[in-house]
Image (cartoon, rainbow, N blue to C red; front, side, top):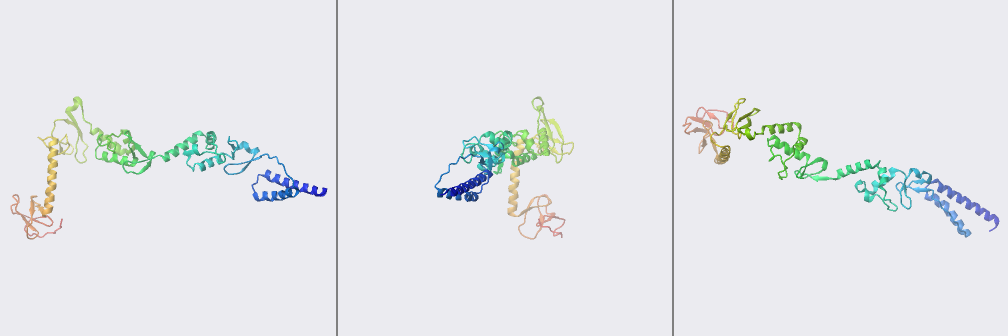
Length: 366
């Protein structure tokens, strides 16, 4: 090759190198353009059987998240990892986005999964805290996320709830606020406010603390609870000769101290008569226990007798209340009981008392 040819080749090589230098300095990432620059240069080297020794100085770093090129002059504003390759992030936003991607947005796994995506070195905690606005804010996020994850199964409705939506009793049994509130309100409305009733619904006999009751029920129900607590109080010690009694009469709120040996009391406000001890009907001469047993036995007998009447198609005479059986005949009945003695009449179908046999009436069958 003559001198003129060498000069021309030198000019072409310089032009190619200048173009390559400008491309690298621009920070662009266009592979097609780079190929167009290098292919002629490569062919020229082959043709001339020459070699090129290149000294490379890294002037750009790629962000590990968005891949944007960061010039060395801008590294002061970037997040630089302490790994051997000095991997970088554009800013805290890119680092935070990478952590959320690596943890699949489950920030509770941040310690195990927060690593450099290129060299897998752990990302220092101080850089992670900074990316989230500081340690205090990061810990707050962890607490909120942990609170979302923690849940329990209510022992009443068997549904799953977050911990913040439930109450854990001293016995360590846990219920949702709705179920435990309903349990408390139902017992309070029925005046069942002692420890035998206001206890853990899981049948462990652990009484429910008054502060939990106040927290769960509405104000009106809690005031009712306080009122029943007061009215259920009984004197002790030397005062045990008296009892604190509230009249069970409908709508009556009369409360009074009565002698503990009093067997019956007629309310001075509503005239309702009752036993001061069991609050049932007066049963003078019988203990409350004996009366309760007799009442239960008779109630059961009444139930069985009513079943017998229905089975045999008997009806009660509207005049004397004695059971009457119709064997044959029409619906007009004559009662021959000791009380009526054949002088009282009624309709078997509607049970209406009549003034005469076969008296015309509007029969409303019952």
